[in-house]
Image (cartoon, one colour):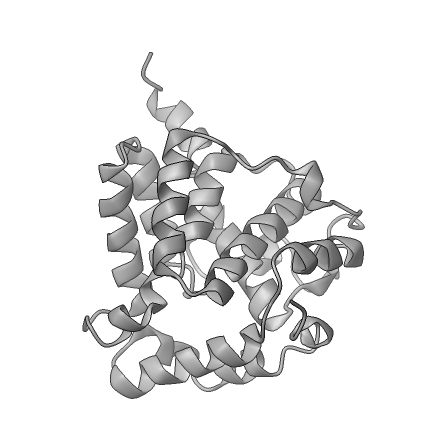
Length: 242
C-alpha cells in the first residue's frame, strides 16, 4: 500500500524545522548529555536501494570522501537520537542522503560542470535514486537536503534531514557543536571510517571550487569555511588515523 502524504513526510524526513538555532539548540553545549553509541549498535539499512546506491557511490568517491560520508551517517544518528529524539526520518533515507551529499565534489564534477557542487550533487542524486527505483518523495528529500546542506541560514524552515545533514557535516568538518556527540562515539566512528587527512583534503577541495567557479554557492561562506575545516581542533588528533 502506498504511503499517504503525511506518512511520506515522516518517513523521508520532510518535516519542517526552524532554521533559527535558538529554536532548537541555541548556545547550549547540548540538549541532553550525550552517551556512548558505537557503530555496532546502529545497524546499516540493507535494502536493494541502499546496496545499489552504495555500490555507485563507492565507485565514484575517493576513499576519504566515502569515509566522511559514513562518519556523517553515524554522527547524525547519534545527534538525532540523543539531542532531538522527536525528529522523524527513516535510517535508509538518512544513509542515502549521507552517501550522496558530497558526490558533487568528485574531480570530474568540479571542473566538468558550471553548477555549484551541492546543486549538481542534489540533481545527480535525484536522477540516480530514481533510476535505482527509490520512491519519488524519498529521492526528492535527499536532493533537497543535499542542495541546502551548505546553506546555514537562520531564517525560514528546512527539512528534518536537511538540518541534520548540516549539523552532522559541520561536526565532522569543523568540530561545531562538539557537545552533541560523546567522545567514545567519535573515537569508535573514526576507527571504523578513518579521516585519512580529511581536513586538509576537503579544505583544498573547497578552495579549488572557489577558484574555478567564483560564482559558486561556497563563496557565501567566505574564507571562514575552508579555514575552519583546515583548523578543526576537535578532529586534529584523529586526522592521520588509518
